[in-house]
View 1 (cartoon, rainbow, N blue to C red):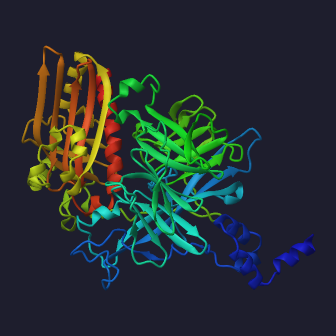
View 2: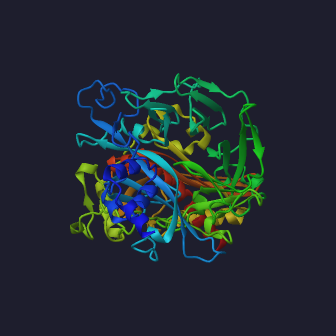
View 3: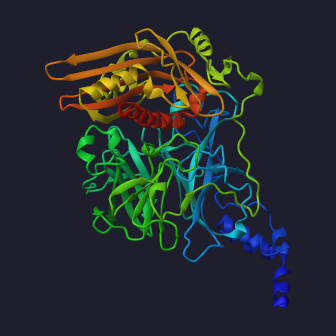
Length: 627
């Protein structure tokens, strides 16, 4: 035995290098280096990725825009480009546990540069800024059975000249999804652009190709590469199949029957294609019709299976031991039999109605929908669930390193400061006092969006969503309408809640509760989502109250416009309404776009925070109503 071991340890280095070159995953590469010291020294400690796209600069993902020296590849020294970022999902099962134990870790890691790691939330695109208190600083991979689950991809924007992007350029940075594909020796990327259209780029090409799917205005929810073709589904459930070579898009003859959700995801599972239809009740007007089905958490799922021979989709009520994972970043599937700790016949997902105040906790918005029980619950609410959404650092024993690039100079402690390069942003280390807020308002000036849009939030949400002028101006619509009770007493209490800013009653966000809701009054929304506090100035642009004593119908609301110094540009309305059915509705409606470079670069996160705020403010109103 010792003789055999000695022979293996003395294999020629060139042979060991060839063996290492055939390993496809980082885990196998780490295991190879861990055999003995001679094997470890025979290869570089850096895993040699076989993905040729990771080391390239990728063209700007839009068609050319006149007068902007950004996207035309023929322009000398183009201003900007993108790089592909790869994240890897791992499954870890402790080796030292009892036979009945099913505890495991599902973790996600991004490596932006060799030997540098970035810790990611497993169920979102968020980087983890703070590890849980009980999470060890060192994790030994020899203590776990490690399996690579899959990879996710994204595009990272950078300006080669170090110049900020313009408002005309920011739209193309808002990429909904990126998937990588390979066909033989051909590599490429398919993306869903910020408006929902599709674009494809192949290795070696100078420009992205826009996909013409035959629709006047495309808005796709998801796209997947399946058996050599792309399948894409839009917001109304229309599915197109795209040929990789010709880029010809063909609509499937049989649309999904029964699809009624707010968002749709494709999932490939053991060679079969599924469609997961997500229905978020809280963002719909017919809440009362559905609440009896999902009374606790208004999230519902339907699953369809693609019958390839017949080119149709069949609804399924049971997927066996399959576990389907869906989020905006990627989708994948596991077997609960092969991966102990997961619950079979379930959909794992993320949704802001599961948010808690501790939003920096990994997996804080994760949930499970049980297809058998037809209910959705937060991840922690399922008994016997042993999967932990955590972060993990690979490479044997390695110390965790958090990204500190966003830290600000401590010399500004306790002071309001304005950064001219960011077009006036009001930051503060301590909780903003009334005096600091007053100083902010004195410097803020007037509204920072076109005055012709002032008061637009008085219109119905449906009208704003169809307003082409708003859309062409770059504004995004955020809307939530939630049933909070019934009766005149509930309405009156809801009105009092708005008048006293109870919908902003958080530790991380607040408005001075003494601020009167009156047209022309300026106020600050103070938030702390990262290290410093941010003061965002606004002005009440209208107050709208209606009553009809005969029909017992009433409504109260007000709209606020952003001022210079706010991270966004736009308007937001909060309202409470008693309808003809004696039901009381709380509504949040806004249109907005980035107001400076900070919000441009982080706008996908800003949009997610807007949705999260809609849910948390609803909870705050409900808390006031139940007091």
